[in-house]
Amino acid sequence: MLFGFLGLAASAAPTSYSLSDCIDQALKANRTRAISQASERVAEAQLNQALSARWPEASLEVTGLRRDQDANFLFPSSTFSLGDMGTILAQALQIPASQLPGVTIPAQNVKLFDRDTLTSSLNVHVPLYTGGKVSALIKQGKAGLDAARAETHRTDLQIVQDVRRYYYGALLSRKLLAIGEEGVERLKVMTELTERLYQNGSGRVKKTDYLRTQVILASLKSLVSTLQSNEEMARTALANTMGLPWHASVAPVDQDIPTPAYGEPLDELVARAQNLNPQALQIGYGLSAAEAGVDKARSGHLPVVVLFGTADRYDNSYHAGLMTEQNRNSWTLGLRVQVPIFSGFRVQNEIREAQARKDRLGLERQQLMEGLGVQVKDAFLQIARSIQQTKSTGEALAAATESRELHERAYREELVDTKDVIEAQLTELFIRSQHQKARYDTQLHQSQLDNLIGQNLAANR
Image (cartoon, rainbow, N blue to C red; front, side, top):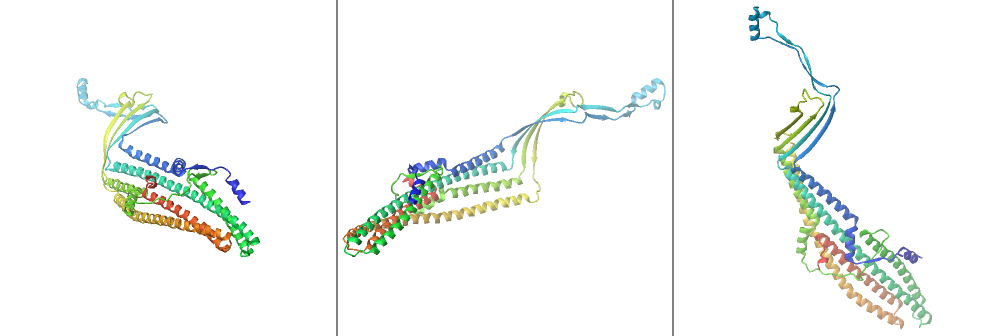
């Protein structure tokens, strides 16, 4: 029943892929890579924003206004004497000058402009000196973009590592399933032989031996059903890492798990990891950004020089008062210098904060470098151990296979006990499984080492 269900679950024929094809597909369709690329575009836009600070800023502002009433200017009434002219006039009239009254001008209500006005203003600002703030922002933007690119590379390496792990995991699952199925077939043959020897033999093989083989056969069939499920899920996990739908199934085209050998010294591997590891590069870029942050904070003590200009135009239906041709169009050019004098110690504390961030990143970088050396050494030793285990289990497998064949031939002649044959068969199955697991572990630790170093070493060999 279970075998039939598993057959229905895996009824769709899997598509065969090589390891390189799986990696290419994953780098195109994996969702995690798309997220990293989006972060890289964000960092690129932030850098362009910082670069824009070097360019002049120009803005056009158009404003339409309606006042509750026309603007006016009230010229108050005033009285003034005639002065010398009054003296001359008094002499002509032959009257005292004190009898001549002063001249009085009545109050005047002067209209300045109509209630509706359209104002157009063009403003231009050109930064001449910012105390190094703009340069620091640009340096931070470049470091941020480099860090985002390193993160994309780090994501690619992780995708490659995952694909290799699932690819060889699917291949291991297939190998273990084949080993289990082969063991089931051998035990079936042995069970039939045990039944014949029990019924027609010399009496050395007993019914308990026959029952023992049946129990072990049933247990092995149960294990094979589990291996079938694991093999199907391993291929599905590989397809998911490649960005394929959940119902897709991928089968490795390789038949055996390769066992590479490293010839590069450990110290060279550690040096390469410290120079090429994406996480180490990210912290290095972060350190550059922190240095720029210190420069940015220090710019708060320096003056800012800005060249600015404006061009204004007023459109009003009134053509007298303030709305003369001379006043209707105008422009202004100026130079503004802002010198910081006292800011309540804010700038000093900003500098301390930026310097502390830089020091913290420096310590984190040192800690990461030391940790990388430990991780590379661990992966290197694990690879050496797995290679040695592959060699040892290969030698043991040859001996176990020969032992199993000898026990099977002797059993047909009733020269050995049933339990000895079963033990020989199970021993061969176990060692064969351990041999395949050792080959898989080698590839697993190799992919971890490649990820730490920041490149695919296996592709270069």
